[in-house]
Image (tube, each protein chain N blue to C red):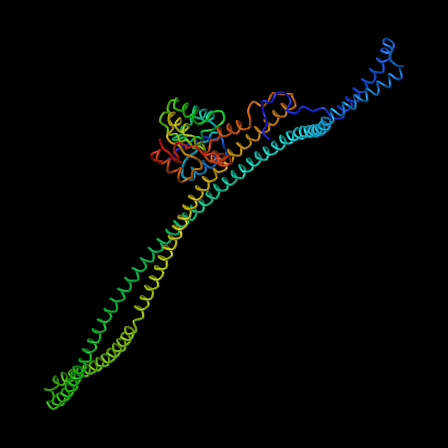
Length: 424
Length: 124
């Protein structure tokens, strides 16, 4: 129902109840009869009409006639009047009921709007508190992530330093092993040369053996010659005495020479045998090449360890890069989430606008009620005007779009920039 | 040295979200709840390299703040970005006339905001 704001006075005037109208008609009949009862005796006295009782009866009859006539005349009108009275009575009751209901409704509406408004404010505060908590937690997550990355970075730096130092040591050890290996090789070469020389020396000594035997043979022959000379000296007598001494000395010398030659031969045999034994042993050791093999194994182990360290360093570097990359993603995601959290401010503004609308509605209902009760002026603005004012106060295009969509209004072209970001 | 950015917004959510997002990206952030409080901070010696302000605020809105800021000595050329839900073109035009450097409509993500800041604040 559209309310006419230009209606003067009360909107609903209570119609007269039908019972009261009937009472009026009856009173009128009674009044006419009374008048007739009082006036007819006077007329009888003055103009000689029948007795008072007759006049009264006549008056009563006349009144009845008038009543019957009146009833006849108003027969249709009376039935209509009764119907109207019934309707009027019903309408009046309805109006009273409506007024009471409206009064109650306005009171309840104000309470209802107050409750909704409080709920909205509470919801805004709750979302704000929750969002502030989320922001705090996001900042804390980021802080923790940064600390973790710093710790990982610090430990990785130390690990990398350790790996570098260890690699350096391994490299140096490898160089030492290579040097030792080279030294071992040169030693083996020298040993080989020495063995060859010893073998040659041994061979040379072996070649001396026939010479010693020749010396020994010469000594034997010299001894024999000395014996013969001694015999010849004995034959010569005194003349040969001096010669005999010489022959004796020659024999002694040949004995000594023989003894020496034998000793030399023995020693040559012994030395040559020892040389051969040592040479054989050295040759066997060289053939087994144990040291070189050990050095080679050590160098191999070192290379393996170095390789593992290199692989560990690479793996660690990859982990650090991965953590750093993940941290960058977290920072970006947190930044995006912090931007999206701005929805709370947008929601707050929209809910505050709804709250304002509810307050306007309550005010309008109160004004209307006071006007209907006759205790106030009609509302200065209709709800249409309030709705238009609400629309004027919108700040977001989304608010206007929703407003126009509900009212089925074709939105005018914005005419401004749609850029979310504009640098002047 | 980290650049200082002043954030002016009546919404605690906006202040904290912008502060966190900017601090994540290495900026130092000062906050104020409206234009009056921001001007008071500037008068007592806070020297931001860039200001981000809301437009619709109690006591003193963003448009009036920008006008007053440009009248302060030493703040004639400080970049000012308006970050708001306001969509009316006349408000945007007024901000430009009062000396704003740019206009951003909420919500703006951290990476987008940092991109704009780097455009208007060389060396950031």
